[in-house]
Image (tube, rainbow, N blue to C red):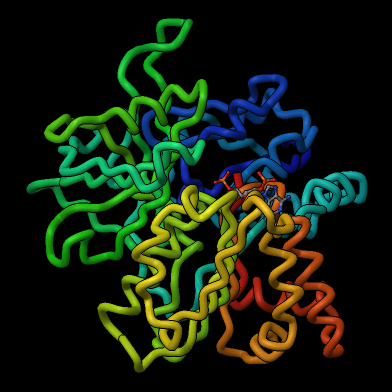
Length: 396
Ligand code: A2P
């Protein structure tokens, strides 16, 4: 009988197929087929490089096994197998069974605020992985509108995709993959790039089978340039939907604290539209901290300003307005510490952070300061929030 080993696995239910782990792994132990991203037990040397880069925490799964699961087995999974009782009475229990050195590596890999998260208790059940690399959906571009001013230095687009007769159910907060045409330098088809959906579940236009995306043109961005240049009527290959945790609570009495920069606003546009469509006026409050360089570079500046303050308290924060001091979202959060402290003590509060990776640290510090100013130990508070599906971070 083999001695038990700890096998590194990826949770196919939560993985959003961004392939970042595969691109990060220094020894090519991570690979994919049309369906799943998997770890080769024969190659993985537990370096943990892939753990902190995973935006969902799906990478952080371990099983103690006598015979490792093969790649072919992992390719077939829709969900992870339970930890098996080991025949030899060896140790079991997944993460608990990791030895000390490995546990320490994992802890270091998790020192950021990302990591595992669970969906809000009242979130609807998302559909995931309906369309994959081998069988993508084909959507038609219904519209492509520039959201930022020509001379703002930032080209952000509102793209509307219509799925026609193909079922494509999405929830607010989920992402979809867009497969850019052509091949890479090795002649392989390009991998899809992920974009957060910015429309609510019943469609950009209510009861139409369409979704919107919020996409920023990046200088050398292969897919962002492709998407930002799409013309009306063009056909686009789409995978997904993906994402099972960064979802909004359906309970209308819950309160939402949302913090974003730039295109990180996409899921919050969806959350806000959902609330306005189904529970306008009757729902728990929402507070938004949204950072951009200038008003001209802030996506949805006009429509956002029309959302009544009693539906959502908006803090639009600018870092490069002439004659004004540079301000980041975390600075404004500190200026609003009393309001946030009150929210932090409410069991109905759900926190969402989306946007630049660099913002995570500052936002965390602000939350720590605010929580501790009212006697809440932040680490413990955050862990409780996360375990209850009330704390969500998605940064890139
Ligand atoms: P700046 O670039 O002036 O430093 P966009 O996605 O449109 O570029 O907007 C990102 C916004 O986030 C900008 O205002 C940018 O400011 C700001 N930003 C950059 N770094 C951080 C950070 N570490 N914390 C919070 N905001 C940041």
